[in-house]
Image (cartoon, rainbow, N blue to C red; front, side, top):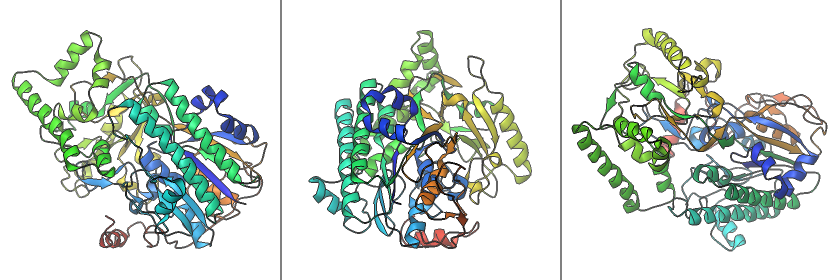
Length: 541
């Protein structure tokens, strides 16, 4: 049976319910299908979550924990790509069995790998990234009558109307591209992704715009459903949910600095997804320098202010007295916030939170990190201290800041465990954000939309048991479910599973052996460093 999976980034049950009156296709699919909450991975962010979905494994088995792969410290690394995902994707298993696939716009699928079928890369790829087979993007452009793009018009524009119009245009383009690929190419499996169902919540605070994006996504779903027959299984899923936060921005490194773990510097820096996106879009050096000049100017002003005894914490305290602290945080861009004061000295610190999306603390371990300062004999003691400090952290309301704080082994057991933060945490109710910045404050009230742990799963078609009630699924379950729907054995190395009672037929597991993926190398073993060397030789790292 054919199977098509539609992945909508950050699709959330709350908004599917709220906008249901204008979402006829989502509503109809839900009425005839099976639905469940879909728990994301840790951390619940695009860079690590979509690889978890398409490999059927958690980050400790595929090796990607965020948007960046660090070469030691957070100021030295690169945006993740398919070359950093060290497991076969489900289309690799299918290609090995001669089953053609269509893969459209899925994040972290660049550089495009040769597969049996079609692959057009998505988010985190450069705008001019090619697909497979060669020339597929030109074919799509000809079919659409316009240039096929990965990113939207006005992607980094300061004009909200231009940015939003670009979002809608891009979803419409995805709709045309999805139909063209399904109708013009051979396939048994298809994975089609839409990113702007996430971006609209991060960049706007307007219910009308949220609804408009969901309606555009609904039209795409409707056209896909019309392009396939009733014998095709359809899955709708999201990598995480999204919703309004009513908590705080937790400055984890500020807390660690107070306890002597973080050292500071006025010269530090780290990689930023915002700055990297400008490169992905092909902006000029002049455009990128404009932001850098602003940051350098602000930093110079901050040093003068510091000489006069004025610190960021003083500015924040004044705003707080006037009841303007939330407005201050919203108005100052993240890049300017980082430039406005001291930053973490990654190499001198004993432990630190490396970035906002990793949801954990990394210990600067001697023999592992290039300039490690914590000896192996101190490692477990330091972990004990970090767990105790963060577990006891309370918000200004007197509530625990985190739902849990734990050693990484509690959540992970894969061969890439050592790349994970040493201590993991989850903000309470996912109602708080995390910041690596140093403001002289532990907590700042936050008024924004951000990720929630549970996304959406809807499945309909002859492969599903109509009366199934399976409870909560996990994101790595999607790939095994898709394999079973295609009447293919589930690979034994997938950590996800097919819940009992979900499908009309049984799911079985087998060992597929070595499967070519990415640039054609076979799956690495736990300590196989030669794979990385081969990728470096090929110019992918």
